[in-house]
Amino acid sequence: MSADLELAADRGLLGRTSTVERLADVLRTRITEGFFAPGERLAEDSIGTALKVSRNTVREAFRLLTHERLLVHELNRGVFVRRLTLDDLVDLYRLRTLLECGVVRELTAPPDGSAMAAAVAQGDEAVRARDWRGLGTANMLFHQAITALAGSPRMDDLMRGVLAELRLHFHTVNDPRGLHEPYLERNREILAVVETGDGPEAERLLRTYLSDSEHQLVAVYRAAAR
Image (tube, rainbow, N blue to C red; front, side, top):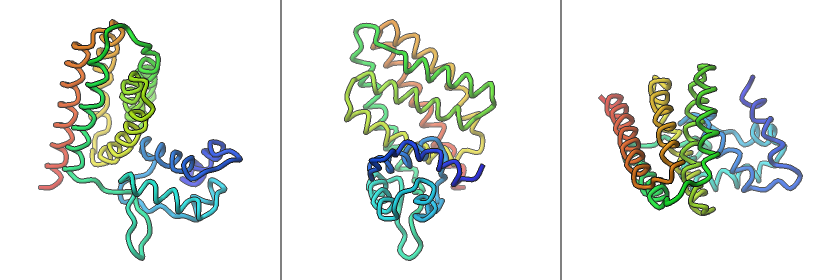
């Protein structure tokens, strides 16, 4: 299926009251899912045609996502998915650690972990289908569900942006299975502890998890720079 046809499937998400924010959310979600790669040019006309919105609406959505550091405008060339740096990666993990570990640290009783459990189940299904990009998406949903335990819409918005940026880093990894599959079992382990309400132990597991993940991606960047 072509990119335009796949994107056209998102048309229903905009509805009759299409807004710049909703279009930006569709594109942000697609970036989080790995649909657009770093350095890829996004064309106003093809996106507008696929989603049945005006070029002005697309242009405004691009501006929002540029402000979120997901896109970059290059004079006389157009709008491209941003290529992130090693410093960006380290900064994202610093923020993830503050957000996610801060949420689980506050647990004193078992929360509703259904969204986390659903993400683990989605990951299992992706492994069975050998869909490694889908496994990466399931992993993103797991971490989004961790932040959602705080019940803060502002934290949810912040985490969505963080995960969308992080997905851009995943494109630098030549072995997506090796990147994502080992963490599925660790997601299951964190879920089991969260469901007991043991905040300190969940934080310990999650902090180690995030540190390992960061070091893995940093190593990929450094190897590519040689």
